[in-house]
Length: 402
Image (cartoon, rainbow, N blue to C red; front, top):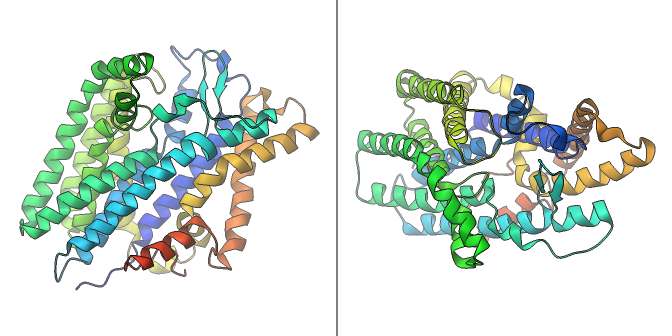
């Protein structure tokens, strides 16, 4: 069996992405005058900020890459369904985390046009000083976590049958690539299917609404982001087989074409943010190309430069407790909001101050993860996750020392 190893360059990708998420979430969702922006045709700065805040796509690709690499590594000698079953159990836990975030701990949605925040339980408590049950609408929201869960479930069993049937390496790569291209291109169907989702909510059809929340709802519908999972799995297969040649001469050019296709489409439609229209469709193509290109290039350049990667301990620390930080970012941000408002009333009236607030959040979290690393992140969510997996007989390298 090929020894299972950590893909350190991709951990850097995850750590950097999380730092960007902290920065932009804390900035955008605390800007008091965001409703004054013309969201029917927003300034390019706001569009770029919305792209940077929605880094969930890169986590979908990262998760698929790492999990496919792990599954293939642990199935090199013998393909056992137990390994894939444990991955499926993990996916179910991710679904529970999705609802924990969307209902209680997670980021809050905002009707930007009318400046009406739809707060989660924790955000409502800190911001208005009251404990209120979450709005039922949160049940019908999507998230990067739910999309990662569905991709994890689907891709693990696709890999299981491919390995069990001993499908040739080239065929697996071809099917993953073709499937990814077909999904991302045909995901334009979401534009016409989305109204059925909103109708189901209006008609109180809860079963259909919750089902559609995974496949059609903002911000990461599986109908589109299954393509991210397929390409992430392809990257994991290529990394396991050490096919840098295919990454260089096939995957990089393909990602550049997706990027160009997305940019071309976006230039021909009015700029919008998180709206299920054709601009959004081309935006997801643009992001998919950008993320594949970035992850692949970083792997090719830095994976064998262990000495350089060893110096990026802060970014690695963010990566190792990425889920814990993501789950607690709103809680800490809301606490900081209260403290800053006592000393500087009206600080969030300008975008510049809001951006400084976002930077402040990143700095504080940097101090937290640096100190926490000395205790190997004991009692973090990842700490208990590793213990849980051991109960199922699966070792994890998630919290391996730097």
